[in-house]
Image 1 (cartoon, one colour):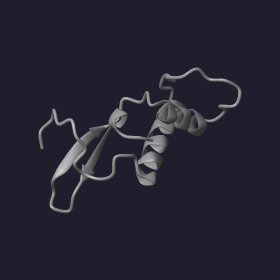
Image 2 (spheres, rainbow, N blue to C red):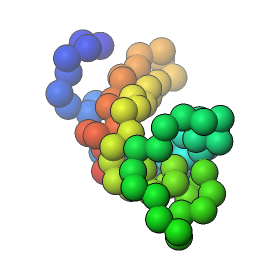
Image 3 (spheres, rainbow, N blue to C red):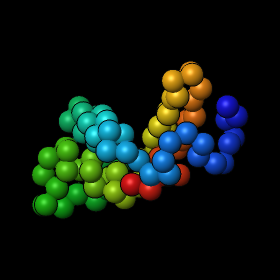
Image 4 (spheres, helix red, strand yellow):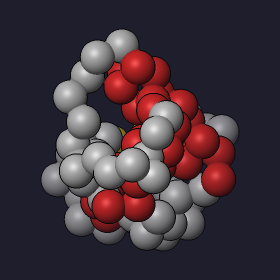
Amino acid sequence: MAAAQEKIVVGPPKTTRFERARIVGARSLQISMGAPILIEVDERLSSPIDIAMAELEAGILPITIRRTLPDGTFQDIPLKWLAV
C-alpha cells in the first residue's frame, strides 16, 4: 500500500478495544521504565496505566497502528487518524 495514503482502508475508523489495550500496555511499560510523560500529571493519575490512558484519550501519542488482512496486505495508520 502507498505510504502517503490519506484514507483508512483496513478496519474500522476508530481504534478497537484490542488496539487500545495494546497501546496502553506498551505506553505504561515505557512510563514505568522512565520515559518522559507527555501530559500534565495531577494527583488523580497515580499509576503508569492511568497516565497512559490519559495520554491516549488526549490523542498525543506518536504511534502508528498496522492493520493486516489475512491475504498479507496491510495498512499503517497513524493514531491521530483514528477516533479513540
